[in-house]
Image (cartoon, rainbow, N blue to C red):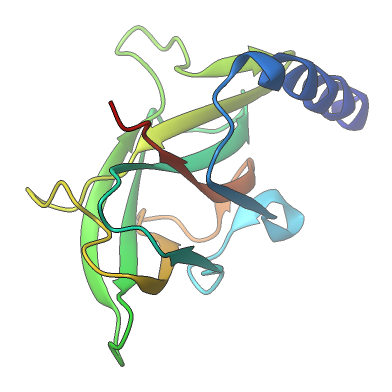
Length: 161
């Protein structure tokens, strides 16, 4: 049943994606056994050749209705071109309203959400040309974090006016 709902959800996202802006970059990773372990920290590599453009960066999460929390605390690690180490910021992603209504788009028992990622007051996440690396680590009190299906990164390049 869950597998069929997921297939229908993916099909609808594919159909509806024709209405959305095409991303400059988007990649999602399946979470092993739908339970996000602290050790599962996929790395997303983005090549940014144009630093005069403005990019909007989103954390992508797909979870089931059985996800037991209304939010998600996580560490966001970034490595700029030429850096040897990641810098990290802790962020809180709201997944549901205080009423319990899930945010994002839902299809059956699967929910998908795109949340803007900002690191402090720095609006420009990509200040120089090159390859950036971004990784996410769940930072909730429970390990593994159940009912998380996919996590990912989406980068949209804003049109120049």
